[in-house]
Picture 1 (cartoon, helix red, strand yellow):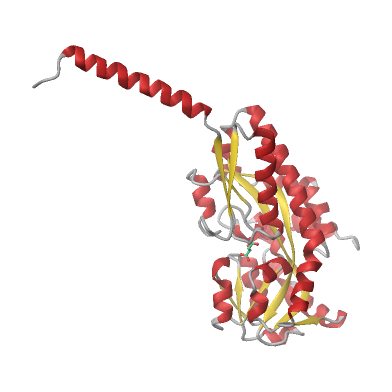
Picture 2 (cartoon, rainbow, N blue to C red; picture 1 turned 90 degrees about the horizontal axis):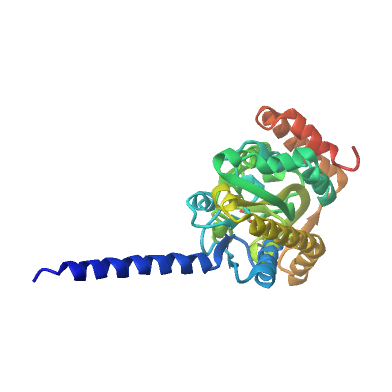
Length: 335
Ligand code: LMR
C-alpha cells in the first residue's frame, strides 16, 4: 500500500525536527582534541600532553576535551601530519626533524653541534627568527603553536664510540631527516630512517648497531637494555614543535582559541621544565641499571666528532639559509 500524503508530510516533519535537535546537541557537545604522540608518558612530551589535558579539563571542560594517545597508539610520526590535515587528529608535537616534507627550514635544528645547551636553544627559539619558523608551514595548512624540549642527544651502540672512526661501517637508526642522514654519512656510518616504534626491536635483533636519542627516550623505551654503550656526546638536539591544522585552529571560536593557546603555553612551559629537571634523572637510572657503560668524551675526542660532522652545515646552508644558521649559532653563550 502506498503511504498517504499526510503520512509522508508527517515523516518529513519528524525528519526535519530530528535534524534540528541533532544540530543543536552537536553544537553543545564538547570539541574533542586528539593529541597523538609517539613517546612514553613519563617523558617531557608525555607530561606536557597530560598537563594540557588536565588544564583544559579544569578551565574549559564543558567545551573542550583533550584525548591523549601516547606510544604511537594512534599514529606514528610518518602519518600524523597527514592525519592532521585530514582532521583525524588535532594536536601533535613531532620532532623538528620530521617536518622535511613541509619545510626545509626546520632542518636547522638537526645540524650537529649547533647548540651548546638548552639555554641557547631557548634564546634562539624565542627570538624573532625562531618565532617566524612557527608559521613557516601555514601555506601547507599547519600552524606551529610552540616549541617543546626533549633534550640533547647521545649516541648508543653495540661497540664503544669514542672517536668518529669507531662509527665507520655501523648502522644507525635515524629520524626521517636528510641532515641526520648526512651527519652519519660524514663519519662513514650507514643511517637508516626508521619509525620510533621500531627502534627497540631493531636494536634487540641487532638489525641496527646504534641510535641517537636524549636520555629520556633511551631510558623510557629501554634502548639502554639492548645497547651496551652510550657515548655522552650531546652532539645534537631533539626538540618538538606543537602543531595543529590551520583549518581546525582557525575554525575555533575566538575566545576558546585564546584560552586554549594559554593552556598550551602553560603545558609547554611545564614540559620544558620536565626536560630540564629530569634529564639527569633518566641518565642516573641508566647508570643505576648497570646494563650500559656510559662513555664520557675528552674535549679532544669531542672536537674530533665536531670536526667530522660540521661540514654538514655547509651542505645544507642553501636549503636552510646561512642567516638562519648564523642566528641560531649566535645564541650560544660563547658567541
Ligand atoms: C624519534 O623518532 O626518535 C623521536 O622523534 C621520538 C620523539 O618524539 O621523541
